[in-house]
Length: 306
Image (cartoon, rainbow, N blue to C red; front, side, top):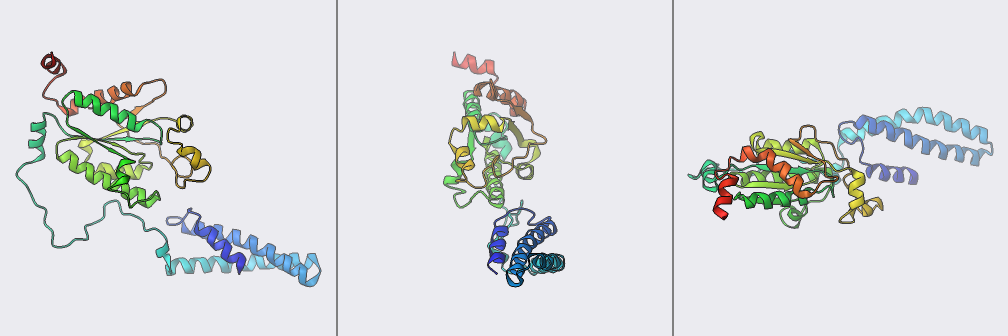
């Protein structure tokens, strides 16, 4: 009973094959438990009979018969859904509103009016990449560059939003999904307000980035992949996070104990090795300059400043 309990606790903390491949998970649990149980039975048979060969035979017989029983037991418990509230619930990519009796209120001033007033189109620019890749630094340089050209901007940063808007969220897969869903919705509001919105987030999974894109709208969404290798990010380790993650002090850390999926369709890939953050920012600006549709050209701005 003690061995079985310890085995169950270990598998409870093992986050593999929980939903889509539950049968594989249960098969692996069956094998590991029977290995533990068989060793225990062999030892007990040897202890009681004094014959190690007999103990081996008893354990082998139990291995064959009880694997099937254990697998059926696991499937039955999985289907029963008993006491599964302890597991974090999977966040939906686009949950429906729980509020009733609400109406979408329409106002006279539209986004097109705000864009005309600002003198440029509004966009949402997502900087995605590993921790320490340079996302926030490049986003900051781009915002400074855009501001110098009279563009109204705002930057949403992965760390900053967790001090307020998303301070109730951790770093599990489900909570990260919800973190990014909220950012997508906030970004959509900023774009509607007429601002070029820069968002520096790890956003490790393709499904999460696709969710943000669906919220913002493909016409207003720009994805920038800051392609800095894990080795280089660890060398920088600006915040000392990789060191803590390697030591087991930080769980669910992207690149170490949590995956980062390479973006499949980024609008631009930035390689930061041997390149300044200003140069990277200029690359992004050149990409978006036509979409901005600035009323004032660079020559006009220079003449006004002179």
